[in-house]
Length: 176
Image (cartoon, rainbow, N blue to C red; front, side):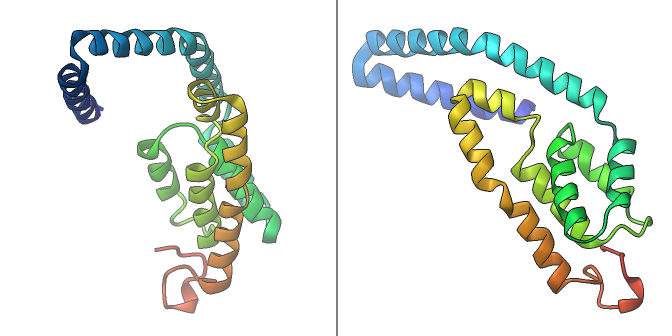
């Protein structure tokens, strides 16, 4: 997070300098005024988005998702795995260790693959924030357009890697 802040601060410094040389302090002030207007317009939506994200994080637990993933088979399991990935709260520092916990539990590789695809493609905890920063229609359109990809990824992984990434068929379900 600290590195991201430094990169953004460098971008701000660069853009403010460029604006100053392009149009003087009036252009810098106009840009800052526009930024403040945008921030104020989005502030309430962002606050509500964080409330939704927080509620999802406490309601959808890793135990719940683990139970769901082990219940289904076939196409239904791939669709459910992708949806579970989209509902899973937190960033990669949370969901990759969660997935590592499945290593010895016999969960097929294609389910893990569609779960990661769902997390990256859907990430419904990001939807309220995305809708507040763009428009709800644009956020919904992006999610609808990406809807089939994690499912297709899971189907392809099931077809081409039925025994995971291991070349040993005895290790069915081992996704190393």
